[in-house]
Image 1: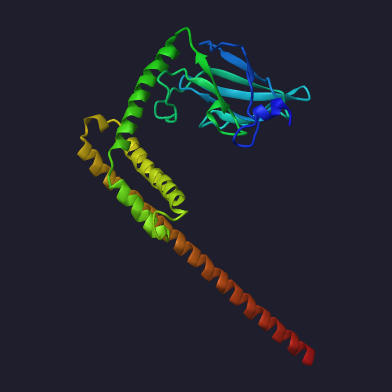
Image 2: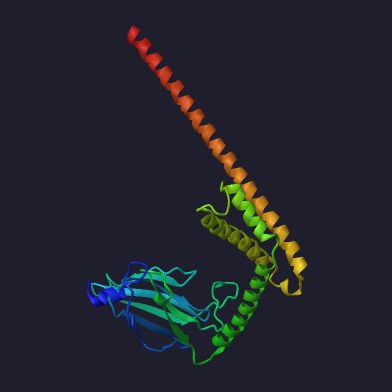
Length: 294
């Protein structure tokens, strides 16, 4: 292995890109208020190939992404809920993006957006290894205003309030979370104690599941009561979350019961169909035997 390859190798056993990784055209990503901005991304090194490109913004939409193959444009499929897509530089040299001011600055959407300013940034994540130095961010810029921009900024302020409301919901527990986690570990795993080799991974797995369940409750409460949350006390919110959790648990239990009954019904129909087929085959053989005797 030469000196360059040796210095580029990282702890993941992959190649760590050196120096500048991409050329972004134009250098400053200024998005016009009444038009779109086309962005070209070129790779400056062959030490990686696959990337994920994300437009992390409240103000702007990624309306198109494409590359050239045999001199013709071919569109990437964009994940609309995240404004992201994957690109392989080994197969196609450059990738192009089209960005414009959003037509729908809905504060109830884009809940994944966490920036303090609405413009956000273009993010490129290198797939080879998810280290921090494998993520590159390029700021998006808005330098003029019109009615649409003012509307977007007003919606963004509402969006930030909604994010604060969501965060408040997360900070109000409805159960002893540590006890709930220990209960889940005791129910689903048979470990002699915390010293067991699999205990730590089990804790992480169950913690992730419980976090998802809590977030489902929080989001359900937010969607139904977001306009009232500022006037509610923590105790009132806790009571509401407990009620909503019970409703969701009951709904899940009812759905599981219906699915069990449906499977049972399908199994009974299948069994009856097989029995009918056997009887029919038996009658057919009996009739055939009778015809042979005659």
